[in-house]
View 1 (tube, rainbow, N blue to C red):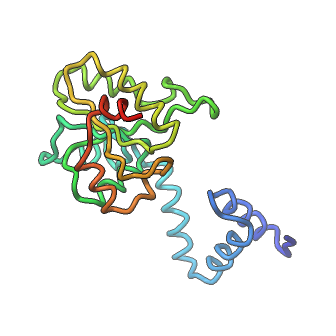
View 2 (view 1 turned 60 degrees about the vertical axis):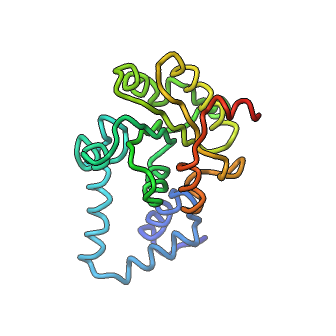
View 3 (view 1 turned 30 degrees about the vertical axis):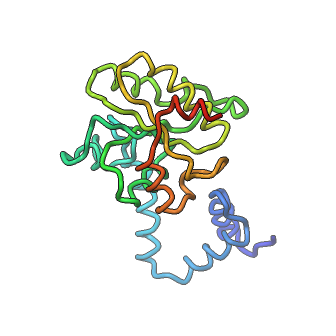
Amino acid sequence: MNFSSKLVEEAVNEFSKLPGVGKRTALRFVLHLLKQKNTDVEHFGKSIITLRQDLKYCKSCHNISDKDSCEICANSHRDNSIICVVEDIRDVMAIEHTQQYRGVYHVLGGIISPMDGIGPNDLNVESLVKKVSNGNVKEIIMALSTTMEGDTTNFYLYKRLKEYNIIVSTIARGIAIGDELEFADEITLARSITNRILYENSLLNK
């Protein structure tokens, strides 16, 4: 792709670094911005910089937040004795959209994937174990994607948590094997959360 402007080329190259954005789509973004008012473009740029500089992660659940504690953890109407373990913030958003879950979350920040060089030490596992060891948790719901990596992570967490006197459950298989949680429709996801099963029972069915 040839450009008559180095400024346009540089902007296109930056946009094309975004996931799922090719050079042609990036060019459309850049040309769109050129048609906007200076104030609108400045606001767009400032919002990205502010996002990167000021965004925080909840000290309790590792969800994104504007404060030290996210709105979910700070909500007195949520049940802090039930923790739903998810891979990333997109899964929190997906489950929250169902409006069927009233517990809190724990964001692992990924799943175990030896092929990608991701092990347990790269995830927010120890902070989860510490929460459970404090004795205030009744149930851990493992709501990870139903992939081989998700199942591996589930099994690792189960081994780490089984010594504590808590319920360890997993979402029902309304989510198809191999599916990513964030792409499930809200009805299926809601049913999977509501009809969760004991993790031990899921092992017997494999």
